[in-house]
Image (cartoon, rainbow, N blue to C red):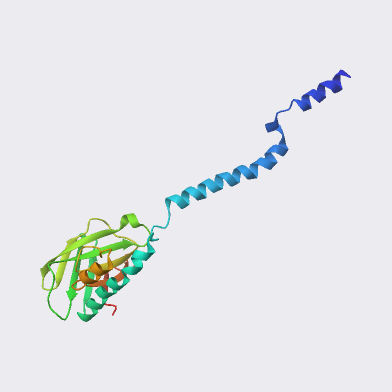
Length: 189
């Protein structure tokens, strides 16, 4: 009688974490929590930073930006961009039908997936239609390019944006440095 009583006390006194059925039920739940934490942290860290918060303001500015493209088309602008990674230099040959060239032009380079790598390069006029600038970093992968005659971003107010776009032109394009080191931008209109 004492032996049965002793084994019953041992069964009743067994800790929950020593039961195989408890781990059979808890293991999938623990794995799910860990996987959700990993996915959540990856999504938070690598969030899509290309999404614009204020669609209304962006929509109002589309006319001003199209005016910049139209002006580039009227001037018959084209630009050949040549990136020389060996000496860290960017050269641009700008051609237009007006034969007037600004003292400086601005190249906005937007990285295809990481907004923190976006940067703006100011190019100085060195000869008739020739511009140069030094590159501050090695460029790789795919980039979106916007060559502008004005270094300021378009104004937020629609009326100001339309007035400011009277003498501002823009050329757009893209380049993939794994495939090429030069690109020609032509007015889209």
